[in-house]
Image 1: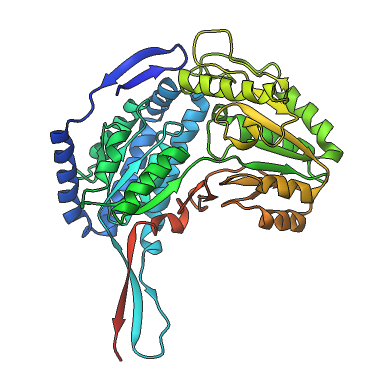
Image 2 (image 1 turned 180 degrees about the vertical axis):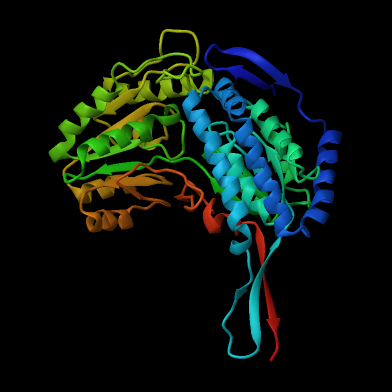
Amino acid sequence: MAIETINPYNNKSVKKFDELSEKELEGKIATADKAYSSWKSSSFAERKKLLNKVASLMKKKKKELAEMITIEMGKLIAQSEAEIDMCISVYEYYAENGEEFLKDKDVEVKDGKAFIRNAPIGIILGVMPWNYPFNQVARMAAPNIMAGNVIAIKHASNVPQCAKAIEDLFLEAGAPEGVYTNLFLSSKKIAKMAEDSRIAGMSLTGSEGAGSSLAEAAGKNLKKSVLELGGSDAFIVLEDADLENAVKSAVTGRFGNMGQACTSSKRIIVVEEIADAFLEKFKSRLEGLKVGNPLEKDTEVGPLSSEEAVKTIEKQVKETVKAGAKVVIGGKRMDREGAFFEPTILTDIKKGMTAYHEEIFGPVASFYRVKDESEAIALANDSSFGLGGSVFSKDIDRAINVASQIETGMVFINEHTASRPDLPFGGTKRSGYGRELSALGIEEFVNKKLIRIAE
């Protein structure tokens, strides 16, 4: 398996890396295990210092790191810079709040005393995606390192320079060798690693298939796991919504990162009363966007992450249109060098069509018109996914009532689904389980140890 940077702007190879041999892999796991034996006893002050130093280095290297993201997976440079900013906020957030989150918690008892002490558990193996190559790692690494665990990361094979850069940042920040370890491996090696007694937990962000495979391996070996998988977020616009805000949020929510986000607003569900007006404004915002080099600041439409990504989306759109859906705008790959696909809106999508049931991981919005609020909720819930979602209405109590009925891990009112260090992130149904970020994210891989004192 090639571990290689291929620039999706021109589909040219940039750099290749060798996969670890069995001997090299064993050496890295042994080093991580040795690091854990001392890191678990490190002070919160020491852990805080490390995370803040990583954040500081990322601030200094922001331009370099952002360009690396753009070259490896095609993200618009302004969005790559925003990703680095988000990482910085995640590292600083856990540096500032980690100790408080993990402090002893008293348990009310009738006699004597009891409390819960959060203790680290060991090496946490992370399998990370290419779409947010720095940020997704940060939200897994920061809380766990602050908790006293150590991290081993098998990153996506198409972002190896980002993968190596993260490890280099930790080493430059003064992390003992093994506290953060990058593993150049094929996905096929993950199930075998789950058998290693030194691996205490496993976390994956990625596809349903990859999540199912990791969960099976983790379960078979009695390892705790966290899965953040796909999504097909419903974006519900009620008739009393602020239309301009809803349209603006739909464009950003669906086409940010070229639609390559698990929480992208993939299903736009609009009440009939305002559906035509919404669709007209939505379409008009996509017309005339500048296509070009993602490294140039004025580019508005860049490439997808890879040629494979374009082919997958092209197939999904063709199948959906062949089954009777209509293309409002876009609908095909661009006739130019690189992994480009047109920003697309599909309508008249019915149950049984590809776009109705599958996650389309790219710049394709599925537009649905419904007669009322009840129909919007029913359509939102008619999905195997349950990650995020949005509700737009000027009546906040009404929006909360709708949000409470949507079967998903997160619902945002009057804004598209987003990620912040202080908000728990995660889903339900086939979108996975467990939570990242906030206080909940640091509690996933700790031993909540009861200490009981007799009266």
